[in-house]
Length: 163
Image (cartoon, rainbow, N blue to C red):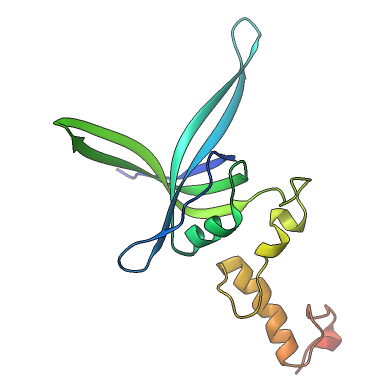
């Protein structure tokens, strides 16, 4: 039987991330995400329900969250569910959490709208720094254009092709 374990959440961060590094040097951070759901009851009243979800981020995603995410930040999280189980004082405990595989910053730093494609200006790729896959593709096309003498952004016309 086939199975699928995917979670996509959009919500607000409930606490500032605390970036930590484990023994092998990997970055990790845990955040809380508040996800709101608004629905109509049988009597016609609107009810807002908030679900609090624990999310674990690893690697470069954890580092980006540590740098740009603060309490209240709107985020899109894509990942998978993981069940943690442990025993404490003879009692078995379990908790369901999300392991983040992709994070997207929503809104802007100033909180007014969503400029720069929803990414804070400081989060854009810069030369020499680590980049996410989509930032690397976008930034490397500009870097490559500059390296072969093309105008930044590649121009857009056939006359700009260097061969």
